[in-house]
Amino acid sequence: MLTAPIGPTLLRLAAPNIVSMVMSSLTMMTEAFYVGQLGTAPLAGLALGFPMMMLMGMLSAGAFGGTITGAVSRRLGAGDRAGAEEVAVHAVLLMVVLASICAAVFLLFGRSIYGALGGTGAVLEQALAYSDTLFLGCVSLWLSNALAGIVRATGNMGVAARIGVMGSILQVCIAGVLVFGLGPFPRLGIAGAPAGIVISSTISTILMLVFLTTRCRELRLHFTGVKLYWAPIVAILRIGGLAAINPFCTLASVLVITAAMARFGTDVLAGYGIGARLEFLVVPMIFGLGAASTAMVGVHFGARAVARAHTVAWTAAGFSAILAGAIGLVASLFPGLWANLFTADEAVRAAARAYLQTVAPFYAFFGVATCLFFASQGAGRVLWPVIAAVVRVVVIVGGSAVLAGNSGAQPAQYFMIIAAGMVAHALVTASAIRLGAWTGGNRQGATR
Image 1 (spheres, rainbow, N blue to C red):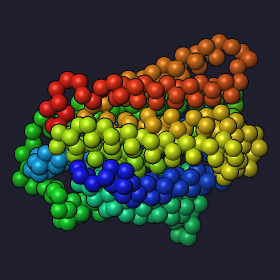
Image 2 (cartoon, rainbow, N blue to C red; image 1 turned 180 degrees about the vertical axis):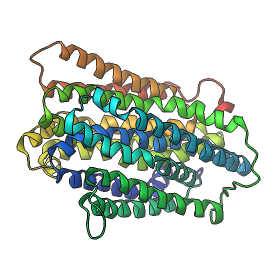
Image 3 (cartoon, rainbow, N blue to C red; image 1 turned 30 degrees about the horizontal axis):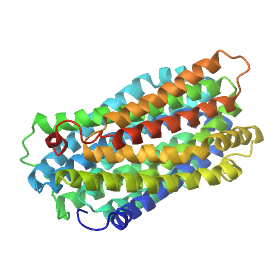
Image 4 (cartoon, rainbow, N blue to C red; image 1 turned 120 degrees about the horizontal axis):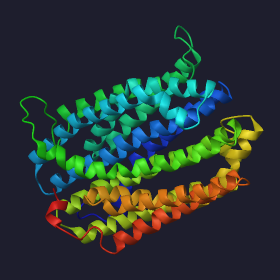
């Protein structure tokens, strides 16, 4: 990673991640298809519950998982294997605690949360059926993402990808069986989809634990005779907690628009949920490149090769812009390819098409901002990418507030605000890094 050509090395590391994330995306598409067969109320309930699942995924895999990858890779880049192992053990224990807190919040206050988002009647009950099942077993998802972050930090992207692909295949099969109640298994309806996530994540966790405790050459995970210290936990919380603002900003944006769409009726809400789901599914694909850039940038910062770390980040961002931009171009030109997958209701399809035609052309900006956020985790410098995420929220919330005062506002106007937020997010992030966001302050702190 320190000496080979950057572009080919980045693609070699990213390729298995991208394959795994594409499988993950297809899995979530299949989940939506399953729920779509249950009717409009479950599909609208999924539109409320799915962002919470994505929030948990972005926190565990993105904010804290990426922070773990960056912290471990910086230690390995500096030649400190013992330090890398220490960080890894403390990270796993911390993720169990964070998962427990996450579960408690949604299990205790889920009805209030989804009710505040506009969920009522059958839609609210469907959202709760999805959410309660998911958060009862969410520790497995947090652990699998934490362990995958450690595996990626060692450069074993293929191992994490193979386990991820296997988990996706299992999730599709298990969810299908439980949603519809095939054979001796009960029909759980919408609750079968998150049950598939929990079961497949548990299996993935076990497989990655076996690899890290018995087969990984770069480090070994040991849980016996380990002395616990506050310093590694505080370091992860400091960067991961700041990075966590990013997914919360994404969630805030989604919630503001979701609440607005709910006022236009169930058909528009369900259609928006289908359209926005594509944006959420672009994230795992960009994560393939982002995870590779996190590890590469982290190793370079650990080795004090900061200038080359910048080149890695810009190369990854360019690849991400091409990938996300291509998806957005196809979706905007042929929105029916996506919208028609999930429902036969023409009113729902029309809302989804309107979203994609307005927002999808700007996915290249979304790809740049997302990838540079992951790269910044490798550098241990996430302040400006987080500020950029806040700017995006300000654009969306401010624009939505203006439209809320206009009785004649239409859904398409809200979609234009989402697109403007994407552009602002990318421009602020890229400008900050270009102007030295990674090189200010104490460089020694960035390597730890």
